[in-house]
Image (cartoon, rainbow, N blue to C red; front, side, top):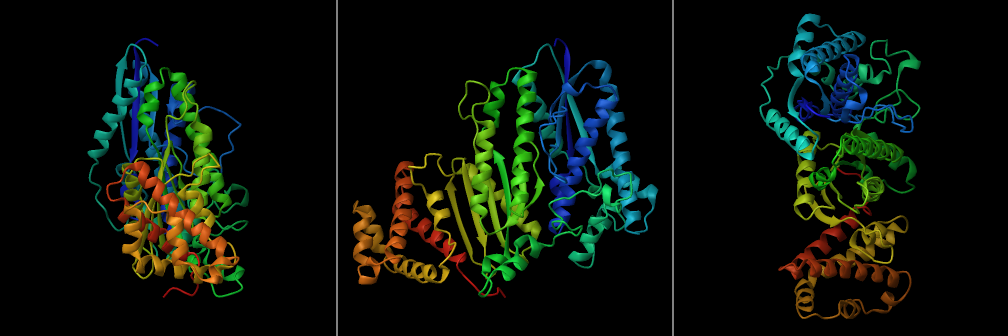
Length: 517
């Protein structure tokens, strides 16, 4: 592989465009569009003579074993490949050809929606709006430093993002705007991203995809209430609707210590295998999200962004963490666990602004990483304005070792909600009332089983099912205390009680009923 030229291409502006949307369908459209640009660019590079095997990120082989769900953005916003000096001059041609193709898809979409537009102006706008840049280095042989150098250069390029003049008649805004969510969704429903072949009419049944943003077995886009499962909650609940059916979750996940893993990859073949594993992870995670009535917005590389109902969101995140470790543990050969997964979860009332949730979930992901990685940072923003927030480690694989995440998921009510709510409210009130007592007991190393027994000492507390409930309450408290002792937290007593109170409030949220105002 002497004298190969290693090339990196960056595609944007993704985040800035996502911030211009106001509906789940709009976010899906934007993220899937940029994935489409990356996919089309890989195809164009191959058509211009680049060998498929030369593209080592994203994976662009022809593996038929991967079952990729419809309408999922699985192509990363960076393309890495190696070539020779003769191919470099073809890269600008490939970029321009893809820009022209995407612009033509927009024109077709606007025509499908009977939106008047100046074809020449819209084409030029898309060409300007899509910021595709590339850098390359010539090296005698491959080493992990090649990847780091390319990514560093692309990072700098992305910071130099050019200004895009925004105007009212731009095709992107015409696809995303509308008087209400239903109007905006109709335009996206008839966009090129809903077609198997974007160059053909989308209304043909055999040319439409079954994306997760669509209702099952129905070619209609799900609105934000449907993603929160508000209607399903009413239909399936014998009593008044539980409040959590008014809430959706926006989740952002990212692999930890990827730099350390890349340092271990010493050949193009290993880098390609890594890219394949990323595609496998994204594909399997997206499939699971769809099964849980969620909507995958992006699943490129080790990054993941999706909507899901608030119900069972922690269980879904833990299942995704399981997929991640099943695929990446033991890679490369001889290594155990080089990488873990950090996740940010923003749970919001269905009327909450999406652009704010997007900014906040990014902060939560950063918080999960700052707290030690391999964690989930959760923020529940209630309709009242109150926030419940906490950060937890992922559940341990050892079933015999109780941890906070397992206990919390097990605690979330599945039935007997009325009884649980009364008991939980009593415990929550007692913890707040006797906060100073709990702090003193913790400071002096008192057995907390004794403290709880002395506080909850009435006959009813010794009868089933209240006794079993209290056992779970104590187990959760002790798990929090043990984790803080291991982390040698200087403010352990205060932090233990604060975290305990947050988790009890979070559990109570899933027991509350009545319509949010």
